Structure formats: C-alpha cells, structure tokens
Length: 435
DNA sequence: TCTGGGGTCCTAGGACCC
DNA sequence: TCTGGGGTCCTAGGACCC
Image (cartoon, rainbow, N blue to C red):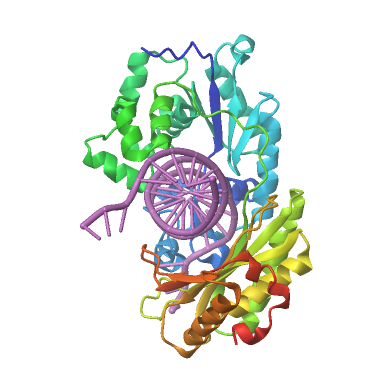
C-alpha cells in the first residue's frame, strides 16, 4: 500500500467562485443574488456565469444570441468583460495567500496552489486554515473562495471540486486528513471526467473501458494507463493515489510562445483592415515579450474565415516569418507580420479572426519559415508553384517542398516549407514572389 | 445576423547523420 | 529480387488546462 504520509506533502488549491462574476459583484452589490453572465470580446459568448445562470442550464462559451431570450426572460444581467479589473483582483487574492504560505503557485487568474507542508503545527487543522483563508478573502476583498486540500495537486483539485459541490463542507475539503475509506467513498461517487487532466476525449475512452468514477481511475493499473494514454495519465493515476508527481512551481517560467489574436466584430474583407489588426497584434505581442525580458526569432501571422458559417467558403492562412536576428523590436515585428500577411491574404473571403504568435522565444536557433495556402488550381497558387520551382532550381532540391496534412481542417491546405536560407532574408525579398 | 483568447506538454514521424 | 540500424533534432498534431 502506498503511503501518503511518507512523502509528507500537502497542497491546497484555492479558487474563487465564478471569478469574473464575483469581481463584478464586489463593485456592484446590486448584482448579488441576481443571475449574471460576463461576456467575451465583442460580447460574443458567455465566459463566466453566476450560480443562478448555471442553474438555468447556460453552458460555458454559449453564444449570446442563443442566450438572449433566456436572459430577458430571467432578467439576467449581462456584462462586457473587464480584464484589467479581474487582473487587479487576482493580484490581491495572491497577496493574501502569500500571507498563509511562503510557497504559492499562481496557476491561473483565479486559482492558486499553496504548499502547506509543515503548516499543520501552526493550525488546529488544515480545515481551520482553509476556513481562515475563506473568511479573510471575504472580509478584505469581498471575494468568495473555495479551498481543497490533498497530498497531491490533483487531489487538492479534486478536494476543491468536492467542497464546491457539497454545501456540507462549507467551502473547505481536506482529503489529506481524511481516512482512506471516506476518501474512497467520495471518489466512488464522482465521475472520472471531473479529474484534472481528464478531458472530453480521454473521458470517452475511459468510459468505453468501464472506468467511470474517480475511484475506478485511481485503481487502474499504471502500466495500462501508460500504454493507452501515455505518461501524463499515468501520473494522474499516481496523483490520485496520493503520490505527488507534480511539483509546485513558485516562479512562473518565461512564456515559450506568445499569442495575440482577436475575432472581428464584423466580417472583414480587405487587406487594409487585416493589416491594421495584425500590426496591432504584433505590437501588443511585442510588449508582452519585452515585459518578460525575452527576445524571439520568428513571428507567425494568421487569418481565418468564420468556421461556424459552413455555407461560406473557408480559408485559413498562416505563415512563419523568421527574423534575421533574435529581437523584441516592435517595428521589426510589425514589419515581418505585415510581410507575412500579404502572402497569406486572399481576396474574396470574409475574415473573422486574425492574430500573431511569437515563436522561438529566447532561442538562438533559427525557426524555419513556412507558408500555408489554400489548396487549389487558381492562378495565384499556380504562380506560387512556379516560384517554388524557381527557388528549388536556384537553391537546390527540397529548398521548398509540398505535402498535404493528414488531419482534416475546415479548409484544405497545402504547405510549402521554405528553408531558412531563403526565408531569413525576407526583408529584402522582392514582391515578385507572391504577386 | 450573432459563436473567446490564451497557454502547456507529449508523441509520432520525417529528415538527417554516422 | 534485394533494400542496416541507431541516434538526434525538429515539427505537426492531439490532448489537456483556464
């Protein structure tokens, strides 16, 4: 039998109930006891729901137009999101948590892990510690939080789920101090899909294999999990048995990729509008890059049509533009992104989304550039094919190559991979290539 | 009519090398 | 008709998270 106390590890997961909604309620008490949703960018869909709204059956990400009638009927308050406010509230939550444990991992905007190892001596029980956190959050910043405690991060997450769903726990569930039989009973009563790390796909595979509850997963042989799903699920199984495999990460490592993207409020058709958006994305991604003191060696620009409008022709274009040197310079990033955009833009499509991704962050090695094109025999594709041939004969075989990806996408794609010897000189490539 | 924005890790398979 | 084997590096894609 694996002992949980042998390791002596205890983690807490503290998370805020319906975070965005709770933040809004702090500053507008009239929203208390009212159904409230917070909407995404462009007020497109629901990204946070109060308990009252959840009870009405509104799902995460539900589009506002499907929700509107229900919202009127039940007098749901619908708010546009205010990320600056949520970020500020999140910082306050974290600073309070640091008063409880020196080791805090900020996992997301509304969740933090705490290392409680050794703190049992300072408190009558971990539950008492959890209740103190709850009270202090309420009194100091007005936010309701929920605390889960367990010998691994996965169990702390699981405990948090139990505390949230069962009013009897009064917002704090301590699995670390619970006896084995009681823990097993709780696990037998909860669906495996609730476990941290079990998403939709793996859930259906597990169901098919007869693994339905958290207890079932805990008792599944590790070798089977490994062979079926890989090391990640094997670790999840171990974590459920109280063997801590995931360490607390107190210092957030620098980001390895940085994305800035947005959907448009209305469909856009022209290169000019896309250029403005992409230039803004490149500039704000650059800001994030500099904020973490990094440089990158490539920038990807991408544009997409509206994937929900199946009746419309679909197109997704993306291109990676390697930079001559690692850099975080806004003008360079913008210039490279716009250079790429011109190459992927195709007239005649209705675009819904655009963005950029910074790649090769803090990596001196050159990231290879590539160009995705809509598959077709149209004139532009033909011109590109000719250009490819020219490049191949000039720079040697396979400088540029083509293949068809195996996974289905809403648009058919063809890829040209260009070797760095060509693409790193993007800044002086004449327009003859794409025009 | 209208459908979010950001990330991470792991693995398979291809390119390339000896 | 025959057609090495092992290692590394890189990328795309699949899965997950909030």
